[in-house]
Length: 196
Image 1 (spheres, helix red, strand yellow):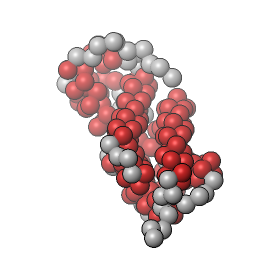
Image 2 (image 1 turned 120 degrees about the vertical axis):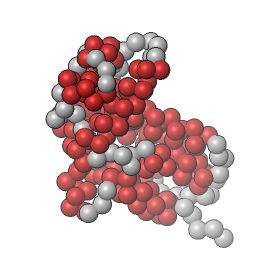
Image 3 (image 1 turned 180 degrees about the vertical axis):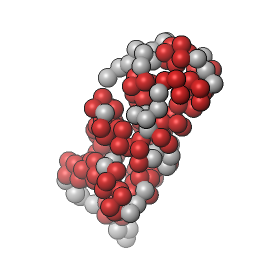
Image 4 (image 1 turned 90 degrees about the vertical axis):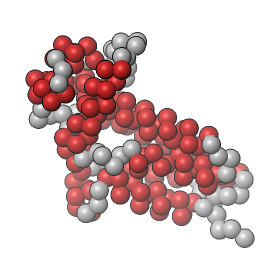
């Protein structure tokens, strides 16, 4: 899904989007009005509408930007390393570090607002595809156990799907970012081949 937005973003608009991201990650978007957003961000509603045409579109702008950043940082991190173990850790790390500010309310809003959930699902498929490529490379080089890569990717994606459910996190007694951190550790320890 591509959102209509200006080709160039001014520094002021970037600052507003940064502030919107912090606010939405902490509070979600359903309970705040555009009037309240403008007051809290010390800008006019017109300025907000220059970024997106509605509160929902502002939320999608923030969600898409957040997910794109996770993918970009993961890809850039992976490119820094030739070693498959270091590559996979560098690739997965932004999923933890960039999710630390995501609140239960934010996750509920993503899950309950279909366009935002669609962005998240697309993001997860893209991340899993790259993950599968890294796993296959590690297996070819004898660094990862020879599990079926499609199974590894699908199990990982299913686990990520559960971590995106606020009720699961609450029942498990774990935060979103801690859940991802533990999943990654479990995933990596099971994947790495024992060293001779």
